[in-house]
Image (cartoon, rainbow, N blue to C red):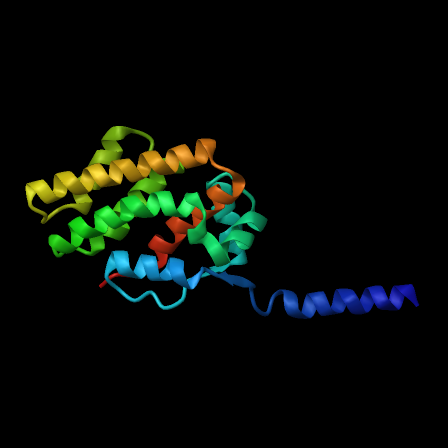
Length: 181
């Protein structure tokens, strides 16, 4: 009898395991903040289970924390502190009519914090690319805001709680998946 129950349980897992990957939805308020910053309606932002694992690895937390924090991500300092820098970046980008720069700047800061950008020359080169077409003063202010964001994310990774690290990971993910036209 126990063997039959075990086989049924395994059969159910096997049937549903590969059909559809589980996903968690980022909080509506967090999605709204991303949409506002990039000037484009993001709709819903969902994180697939496989992406949650990648985010967790990239930002030194667990997939369980990423999943647990997603519904209230913007309530954690791992989101709210970086969001202040993203808001500043958005102000500058909107004034320069270059909304795409926000996602690019956040991606650069997140890559720096994750150790994917290895040196300041590569960081600065990426920033120059993101600010092409901006007036000098706008580009300079945008670079400063991006540097501040990178510093905040790096500090969050070094000193934040696991929930704050998960929120920061979701922050980076949210900005990376929203496509600005």
